[in-house]
Amino acid sequence: MGEHLADHTTLRLGGPADWLLTHTDPMAWPDISHAVARQHGIPMVLGHGSNILAADAGYPGPVIRMATQGITARSAPENKVDLTVQAGHSLAELIDFTVAEGLSGLEYLAGIPGTIGAAPIQNTGAYGRQISDTLVSLTVHDWLTREVVHLLPRQCGFGYRTSSFKVYPARWTILEVTLRLRRSDRASPVTYQHLADALGVPLGTTPLLATATEAVMVNRRERGLTLPSSGPDARQVGSVFLNPPLTPRQAEALRAVGGALHQTADGVVRGSAGWLLQHVGYSPGQVLAPGVYCSDLRALTLVAREGVTATTFAATLQKLAAHVRAVTKIRLCPEPAMLGVIEGDTSLAAVP
Image (tube, rainbow, N blue to C red; front, side):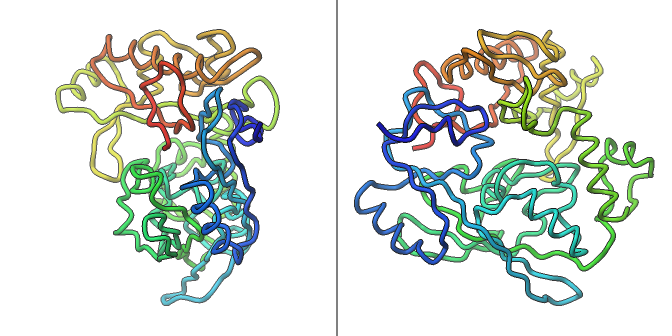
């Protein structure tokens, strides 16, 4: 019986993996990747497991938990600095480092759980910024060619909460991320109204880095957008649905009933998944199924509590999406990735 995935995911769900390795030494990767491919096949790679729904039956294949650490800095043109960060490094700890060193560009991603290596997979973003905005290159292992290669942002298929790594999860493993940040004690311009209101400043303001980061953390906590270390909402993966793209007719219909809309960096008008859930009757703290609740602060975050299974959690996602579609004709797409096969579930893209 292999090690249980529940011990490595924030939902604390998931049965045993056939074979699980924790990878800590970057220099050992050539030997590890060769041995894994030869003996076990192409692995699934986990970071902190904060966006994963693992099956009750576990995963019938190899899993590598990426736990490499380290930041290397070097000067770049125009008063900028390139940081090369090992994939297993905590995103939160990286942001703490950049604020302390006076490096601007990542501050609006404060409070997002997970590793820096996981961030490019879904092009992690918040408050009008996304990880691809500062990305210079990625060092990845290509399981097709069995070589380590360097990819530029234009080769990564970045979009709203997506990338080539999310579309083709078995093709590449991210080993290092290189970001280019500005030497400045000032944050990037505030472009998100929620954050401007929290800071009490107009849009376009460039607050101090520490001030911006603290405001982001306070605003995220108030809106239920952080991952608690304990308590009834601790077992979660954050938002469970992506904000859906809207046709012009759908956008017009949502505006007519006071729906929340916004335009993302890709130019697409999207509805608020959280608003849609509340519009059809779901509310913070609501019991949805045995062991599955809306978090105490928002309907868009589902939490796992005593007695829950991955099968029940996945079925609840299907139920919510079907309800929204029946009422609004808008399709919600689940955000967490599924690891393994969950019986009866077709709502999540399974990781091969």
